[in-house]
Length: 221
Image: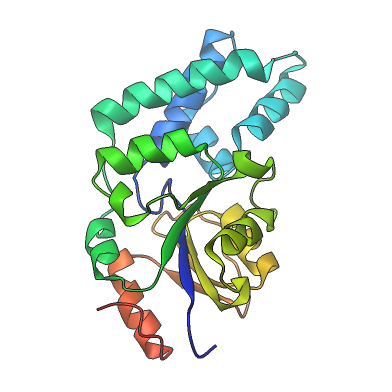
């Protein structure tokens, strides 16, 4: 690929250090309905998985009927509370975004309001004016490639000439299925390894400019 038309970033765990916060909110949500889950297990098992799928999985495993329209507001309120008090940026995220000259967007399984909250709080929202794309927009979530195609269409770029930066296996699989170059952020040792010619694994956002330059892509200033 000689030219990159756009960069797609995941949000939670890629730009904002929110994965453990989200896992804590899952634990609190289920606890409110009488189900006790282990935080580390939730973190390992459900990283990058959409909320509705988690609710469905736990409902089946515990043999109960949990209504997502009842649970979701509990989860969103707890996430918002924790974001306000504890959320931090992933190391190097702000510096990386400031250096990029290629068009960028965010593609997340979470709702736009959640992205606005986290990115706004951490001073990154201005990098993505009206370029926050959510699985909720189209009711299809990673690992389905539909979100990547939706974002590419909105940005008027060729998805095969775009890069996805994502820290979850589900996200990486969506990029692979869309025909993108995927940079798989594996700072977390729990990440499942992915062996695919379109996937480059890395462990620090500061590595990305060098990795891109080595491929002949002038993405950063």
